[in-house]
Image 1 (cartoon, rainbow, N blue to C red):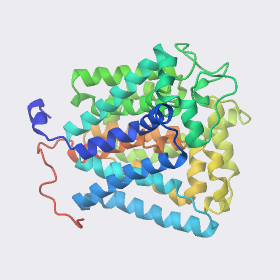
Image 2 (image 1 turned 90 degrees about the horizontal axis):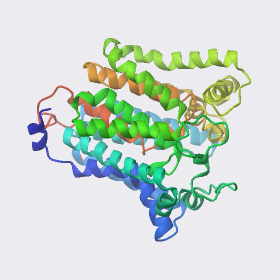
Image 3 (image 1 turned 120 degrees about the vertical axis):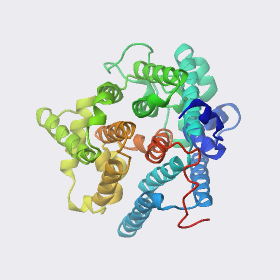
Image 4 (image 1 turned 90 degrees about the vertical axis):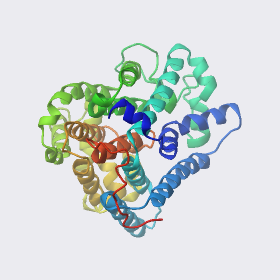
Length: 413
């Protein structure tokens, strides 16, 4: 969109607040926990509930439209699966429902979001990430004095700090001898996310943003996103996101020539490659790329019929490092199939940017599920991805300032 037209768009303060708070709320709570008053686990849950409640309230206020029926149908199907899993196991488990609620909320918000607001969300979040990352790199003591990750995760998650370090960082960010590293800092950077996994995934989010949107960004935003992504990658020592980012450079040029429908084969293809890797290293247990993939394949092989039907719910949280298994135990094989189909088919695929974005998101999601699980569903990173997906799906190529003006709602609040 022309810069003059962009300036005429009104900032949607509700979407801006939801987008920025979704990324930063943990850091805000950590600052309060360390510098003002101790917090407990309930405040974290309450904060996320409030953000989701406000998002859904905003959506209902705007009205449910025909364009929202697919994400709404996905949410309703997930609710049905959640009720089924709870009933057959006689145990409350809503983790997967919460994940899909994040997808639904930010997807529909993306349809309402205008370009000026979208860019401001990404710019604000990325500036916050970059500033905290620079503080962490140049002075860990200052960084800890602001948010003290170890204390925050102890108070709100019950995760004890590492016994071998008194830096005040989250234990997972400390790394271990022999782990892949660029040697820039002596730990894995966490920035505003307080832990290393979400920080690494934010580099992936920046990569997705650049791949699908770079030709609509000004020079400042390009440099901001590119420098932040690179700085995260060289200080976080994230193997998967490094691989993803390198593949995305090539993908930027070839994605427009790949039909969108082929994304349906992305997940089976990645799982098949995982089985091939596992066949060469069936006993790999190391905390590296090959070890994580081999572990996920072993867990897939170990699943039985009862597991695929959601009858072994108690094992779901055991497999947080094996995404495909984690989803299946908590939402049945049908929950995994729904996720696969939604990720593969829902994003737009008509314009070059839509194809770039759709292919990049599929690679990001399905590759991540081979070595992890909960990180790709986190509001701290996933929210921005879904906001961008639906913005491009419904706004790419349109010249109208208000693309919703001609639509009639199916239902209004």
